[in-house]
Image (cartoon, rainbow, N blue to C red; front, side):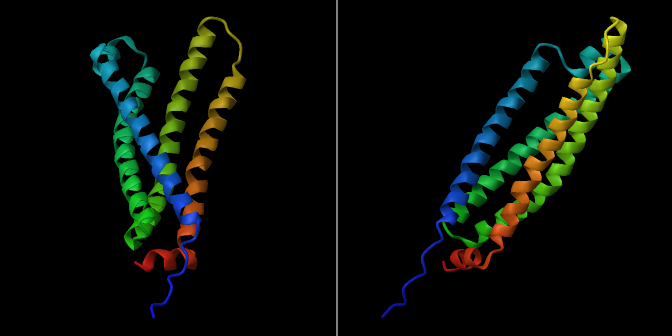
Length: 182
């Protein structure tokens, strides 16, 4: 008589499908974002074409946006790997669980890189906005300043909280046992 298989925890399909849907949706949005970079280049709004007309602070921001394109391409590849890992996890493969855990550790690293890029772009924009507002006799724009800063901080936590939660979840004995059965 065959021994009955333990029931798969209901959290596995929920986590697996949520991860798959989110990673596919975000990868799709990143691909659309890459098309906008190409449209800017086709309109002649690339850094070399604009650099002769820009201030030094704006040139620095445009250079960071160029790196943002590279980051978007990397992030699209990362999200595709996460989608593949989620599919394997849904199939209860141990490799899917391991890939998702590795992706979460990489996601923690991504949080720091993404936050640093966002902060430097934001910082550059602050000096540019200060120059514009002071040039037209405008006052202080402190509310815009704090909105950008808080957006960066919230974005950082939106990266790390799910990653840490997922690492803890994927290391639970019930999850390890469910994916190692097959």
